[in-house]
Length: 120
Image (cartoon, rainbow, N blue to C red; front, side):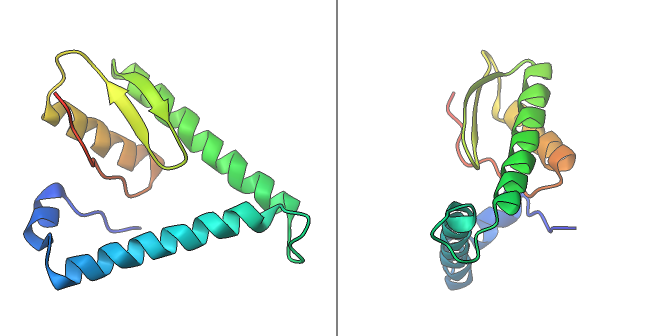
């Protein structure tokens, strides 16, 4: 089970050398994964595997549709969704409301999810 940190623990460690090291590592690993995904189904890749490419897309689509259904069921409008992020809107919603959605999505998707920005 992946370890999920709360926002409280995030602010305790923010801007320390350890935090910066982890942040750089996360960005590097994400870029590697995105690059590997992009070449998985490419015909010029000698290790290409169209079945793996299709499976990645199928799983991603399932999580995205599940996310859409959950947030709409909670009364939020899904403004935009991308590979690894969703943008939500709800009139009168507070930071606590968005943090609650974050917790629900993390539990339902089984993935570590963080709330990066909140605009009132």
